[in-house]
Image 1: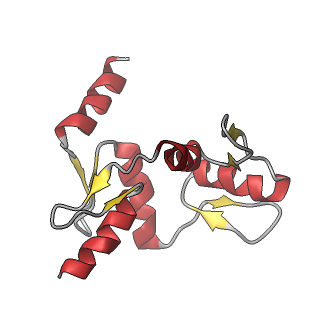
Image 2 (image 1 turned 180 degrees about the vertical axis):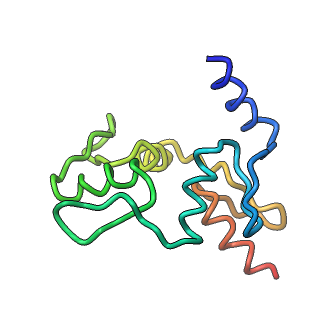
Image 3 (image 1 turned 60 degrees about the vertical axis):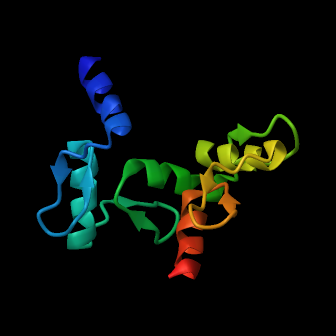
Length: 125
């Protein structure tokens, strides 16, 4: 859809038109902002029927349910590893390719995940 394309293009421009009035958070869709606002209220409307787990969005509850079923639909074609989320498989595949797209601008270190680079950057402060 044209709305979907506009939303996708925001990823490339870095524009985040939906801003939280309670903190500095900003995002590209109204639905993400709505989910974010739940972090301020503490509300977790999606509840697991099998345990006490609760969360703010339907995607997380679906992934959580896989911990009860053991389901891991994203399988590596090179080795036996399997993952609940596509992102887990994507990061795993980098162990086979050696790819480390997140590079430190100060030293030679590079990482598979942006969160690992952010943690590393703290060593330079």
